[in-house]
Length: 288
Image: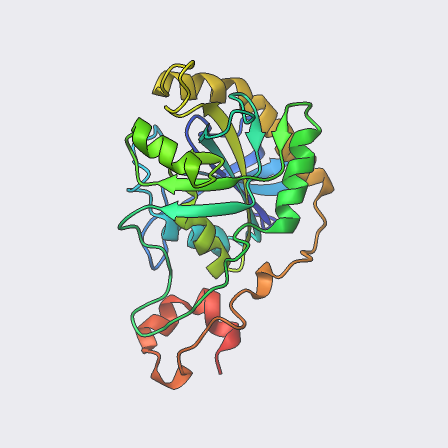
């Protein structure tokens, strides 16, 4: 690997590879939290180094709850990635966010159960700030890049993450709408929080594939519907990533790179050696 890939792409349902990558190399990364969903593919796009990870594994064999989010984020951090763009499928909970359009959300609501939401624990505590869970700088660049493709894109939205793998009932979907949620998916949480703990910028390019099940004049969501929209939007996603790479500044100008500076609360003298070693990639610069 000649250059560190400062941008990482996590591909969700329907996007399992980036065909335009050049000088591709598959890298197996082991982490203290297990193995990632798939080997990370590192290559160049428009001359820029980039890393790609298939969230659900090659062949899509991992449910949203089975994805090892901690290993995925930690592995990308290990390779030198500083920014992550998640390309995800989502359902719309709003009439004006139509299938085929893209949303760059600015808020998230975690409605999952039983997932590992943090790298911390086992003798070390951190309280990370996620009032604004997505990197506003990166999200703006993603929005402008998607807009450049000509597709209809929305710059804000509240993204509720459900456990899955089933789709919602009508009662659930209508409840989420009454809460003011904009879109619905199954993987943004805890990925977004782990990226913040790893001091990585994180943004989502959410492809609206359906109206969930609340819309009375539309068919209920199905796998076929999701894949059809995503296949249609694959080239749009790759075009937007190319634009993004050509316009992202080399250095970050946001607070993500120092997100842990005021989050660590445990006295360093009582942190177990094993825990400190496991988290050294994330916290060593803050510990005496």
